Amino acid sequence: MIRPWSLPFVIGVLCLAPACKQQETTETRAAEERTIRDMETEFNRAVAATDFERSISCYSDVASLFFANRPIVTGKEAIRRYWTKSLAAPGFSLAFQTVKVLDRT
Image (cartoon, rainbow, N blue to C red; front, side, top):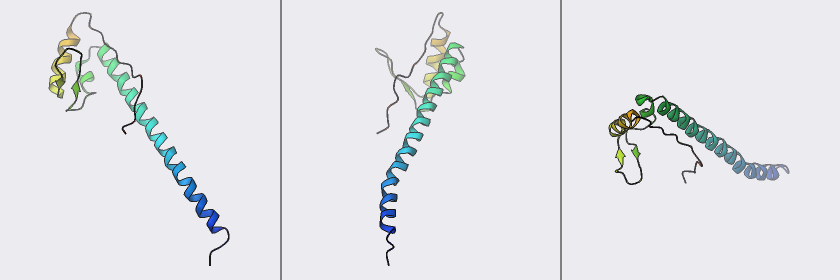
């Protein structure tokens, strides 16, 4: 026997389920964006301090650097060589600023 309150209860649960997922997705996205911005801050500090190893630690082993009118720099060792040379140049400075973090989809 179906209780009179069971159908509205089930409908209510089904309606709330997407809202719970949306909140979880929003919280996850905010955490991921915070991580990206924190990594950017750490990288900028490392570059300002001309700390080669700390700046390179922000890259994965398969990362690539893309600059206009220059060859792509691929791999952590190639990135290490690039930053070692660049950071040693007199007057070199660089800072990144994230403007927008996009969804992966």
